[in-house]
View 1: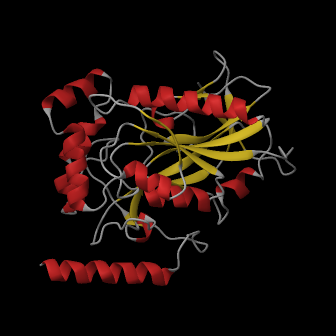
View 2: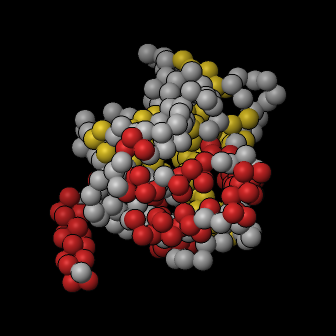
Length: 319
């Protein structure tokens, strides 16, 4: 579906009442899922609905403890993105129809994604400023990279530990004329056609051949896929370390998983010129992310400082 962009009018026709829910797909992400969910709530999400691909670690338990609502756990022999997107779309449709609401904005998330509103606004506050014509919202998408330890800590926003990042906006594929890698905000309208997300939440389908309108600008997405090194390597080994797994992923058109696995050494050694940027070949050039307004967090800076100090003390005892 083609996404076209227009500026939000100076005097927008506001939607008025709407709900903001999130749909989260997870697989083996116990180290980050709590922070993902708490960030969504901090951004104004009312309920986070979870679809889990049969994680065998503590992902689901930690997600529920953080306030998520488990919708479904499904089992596949390998991680299965195509099944996941079918179940996520099904959950969005069923929950939206059963809600009785006329308008629901849905925030589509992977467990390693941390979206936020622009200009110091929460996502909910931002959506409240938009003209009702907009049914989809894209965002600039930043890949973050670790440069010191700890690379991440459970329960804390990973950008506070990984400020180095790079805008990810490959030339192909492109889903709109803005530098948006994903369009994670999609609106259910009871009186309109159902909007169905594609794999990866890059865009969505509506009616055959119909354009969908997004505002210029949009939100910001932080992608933190390279977290604590040993956990990240173990997860990537399980995901795509074997030949059979890669052959399957390639057959379904997903070749990026193997590339992510192969670039781990370059990432964790900070060999930026050798790192695969997954878009246009090798080489990344991370720069520090700087907040122009105080970031929206669910903890104080002192809490993070104490957690980092405790982590370093524990590492010193182990070493």
